[in-house]
Length: 217
Length: 217
Image 1 (cartoon, each protein chain N blue to C red):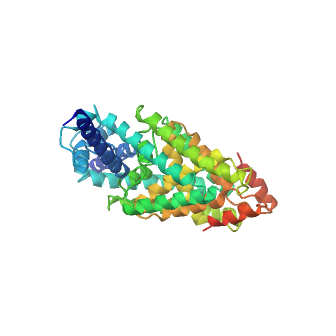
Image 2: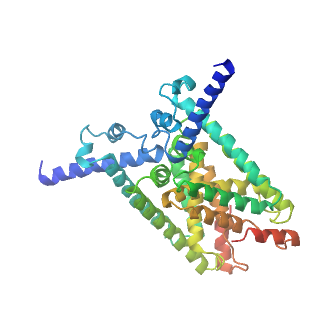
C-alpha cells in the first residue's frame, strides 16, 4: 500500500470507531459502554483502539467533538432555511428530531445530554466541550427567534436568548421522557407547547400572521 | 439479641444500603455505581448486600421506590401548603430544589431522570416504576395549576395537565444543565420562565392579581 492508501485506511478505522461510539453513547452510559463493544460495533480488529486513542476518556472527547460537529451542521441546515418562516423552522427541527428518534425505536437520546447527566459534574475534560456544544445550539435557536421578532411574528418583549435556553432544557427533558415512553410524542408535545407559549405580538402584521399559522398545531 | 432487635438491625442495614444507593444514583450512572461503593458509602459489612438484594437490579428497584416515596412526600408538603398561592408554591418548590442541589455543590441530579436517560429504554423492570413516578409528579403540579385556574390567577384556557408535563421536561433539562454548569441558576431561570409564560387571565380578579405578584421575579 502507498503511504496515502495507508493514511486513508487509518482515518477510516478511526472514523468507524468514533461513529460507533457516537451511536452507542446516545443509547447507553459512558460507564456502561465497553471498548470491546465499540470495536465490535465498528467491525474493527481488536487492539486497534489504543492505536488511535490513548484512553477511553480521549475516545469520549473524540465522540463528543464528532457529535457536536454533526449536530451543528444539521441545525444550520434546518434553522437557516429561508424557505420557511423562522418559527416554522423551529417546528420543523422538532419534527425532524422526533422522526429521527423514531427511526431507532426511541432508544437513542441526546449524546450531549446523556454525558452531561452522567459526567458533567465530574469530568473537567468533558465539561467545557459539552458547554460549548450547548452554547452553540442556544445561539442557533436564539438567532431564529431574533429573526421572528424582527419580522413581527414574535413580540418584541420576548428575550430570544432566554427562550432559546429554555427550548433546549425542555427539549432535553422531553427527549429523556421519549426514551422512557419509547415514543416521540413527548418531543412533539414539547415543540407545540414551546411555540404556543412564546409571546405573540398584540397585533401581528399580516405577513407574520400568515406565517405564524404554519407552526400552530 | 431478641428476634425484634435482630429484625430492627436487619431493617436498618437494608435502609442504609438503600439511602446510600439513592445518594450515589443521583450523581452517577447505574452502570458506573459498583456494589462495593454502595457498601462502603453505607458503612455496611461486605457480603450483606446479597442477603438483602438478589441482584443489582433488585437493589435499583428498591432505590427507585425509596426515591419516589421520598419525593412524593416532599412535593405534597410544598405543593399543598395553603399558606401560599398555588403559583407561589410552584415557585417555592423550584427554589427549594435549587437550594437542595447547591447543598451538594450541584453534583446531584434527579435520580428518576438519570435512570430514565440511562436505562429507561432498556429495562422493563425500571420503566413502569419510573413512569409511575413521573405521572405522580405531573399530577401534583397539575393539581396546583388547576387550583390557580380556579382562583383566576391563570387563564381558564391553560391546560394544567400539559403545562405540568412541560414543567417536568423543563425542570429535568435545567437540572441536567445545572449539573454541567455546577450552578443552580439554570433551575431558577427555568422556574421564572415557566411561570411567566403560563397564560395569565386577561383581567385578573384583584385577589389573584395580588397573589400573582408573589411569583414574579
